[in-house]
Length: 224
Image 1 (cartoon, one colour):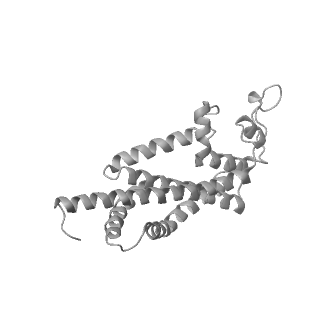
Image 2: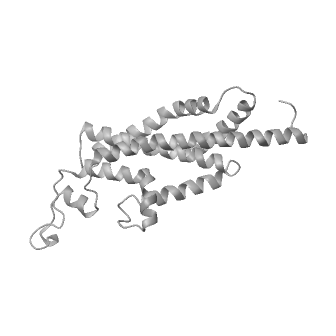
Image 3: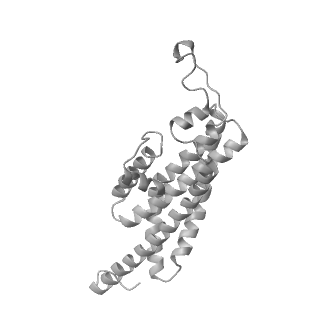
């Protein structure tokens, strides 16, 4: 989101001005913006993948590195898309866009399945379009399945550790699910949110065009 706030508003205004001159359309703008942000998102995801796979003693393997990198990339991309949506809706109030998106991200991460295990029916339904839900549902499974945990004698309950394996943790948090399915859904949501951003930019383009036309008619702007 911070990267989006730093770059997108300027690029958005430039696009609207050049669109009014019939230079290019929404698809061209969003495609070029996506291609330019891609290396930075990928670099951040690779760094996260290294830490998630090798710095944390869970599943130290190239496979875990790839899974962590893909998950991080999808979340960053979804954040960029939502940043585009908010910065287009609240084009004159970047601070409001940042606070609104930050609040939404905080709620989504809280409902992901680790902090809040039971949700009201409405929030449970909304959670199905949250990328955080599918991030946790696949990353937790890939990182915890097959792990064995031990405990000190004074921590045992009835002669055994309360948590003996990664599967115990997954059952405790109701996360013993199919990770591949959730990773696929997360990938599809990444594309879905970018399509929403495309639609919002297109709607904002029409609003900008109307403002420009009214300004020209009222004489506040010269002929472009």
